[in-house]
Image (cartoon, rainbow, N blue to C red; front, top):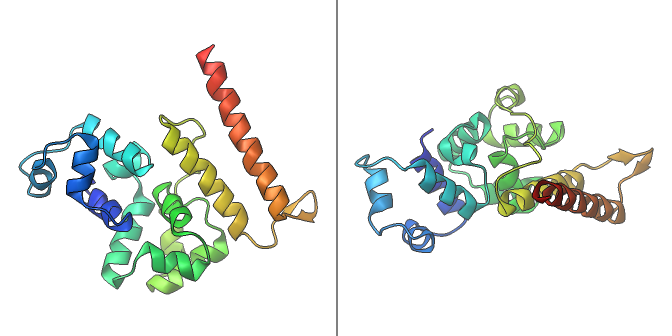
Length: 193
């Protein structure tokens, strides 16, 4: 899938428009229109700015995430939105969107079965395009925040998840989230020194 199609999807799911994004990123008013019509290709710098704007990776916006590409195609074919799928999975839309943008590896097998059922495909069709869990180090604060949110969403959505033989409670989830944030901050600070 091309970057413009992915940006259109992200604009729609974030309930904003190209004019607003362009204005907030300092792009000319006509640039997105030129991209859509194929008169101009988005530069790597522009794609990076757009990725940061949406809190996703450059790979996501560049179309290098097969799982996201497949999900966009399936949702368009079925006239389905992230909000509808997230509601069916009983998770926040932001978490759902973050997980599909990150390559889908963060959904539980049961959640993938639910998504496949809602989209009318076999679960194996979704599994073939899953990517490894996103790397811990990313290039922006928004990406790190989205990563922590996606891990937290995974913990919240996985019922029956055990830690040392005990069910993960909301308090444990908060402790894990805090540990992730502290660990990322320590890693960031060690890179500065």
